[in-house]
Image (cartoon, rainbow, N blue to C red; front, side, top):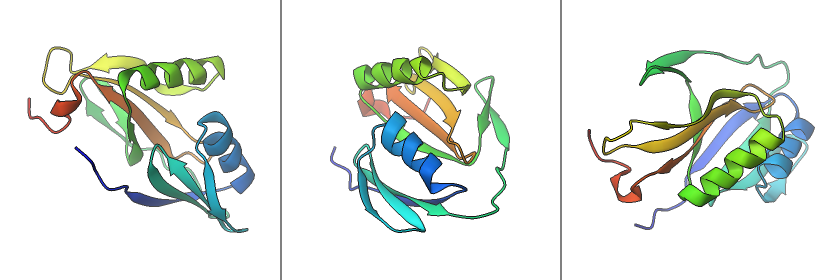
Length: 140
């Protein structure tokens, strides 16, 4: 299945911190930028970090499969080997996880590897990989 890229614009409190996190740690190529925003290629999708001076991190979560999942959040669904490599890179960099890399919904159609963490501005990210990518939208 070929999907068109999505676009997401989100607030950050510091563009240099966003550049270090998205460009440096996650390895997302930087696109256009200004003194107020930075475009990134986020695993084939366009995300834009917009400077929002004075923003305060928001922390809210919902219970999902026995875990407190931060909402709102955004992320990507990667191939399993790419997910594992990123999980190891983030662990090695000392990233504090909201949910450590783990397997959720084990044995169900939606079985997935997942991890949750925050960027420096408090935006929650989920990076996941499906055991069976064809079941990304399957109902349990």
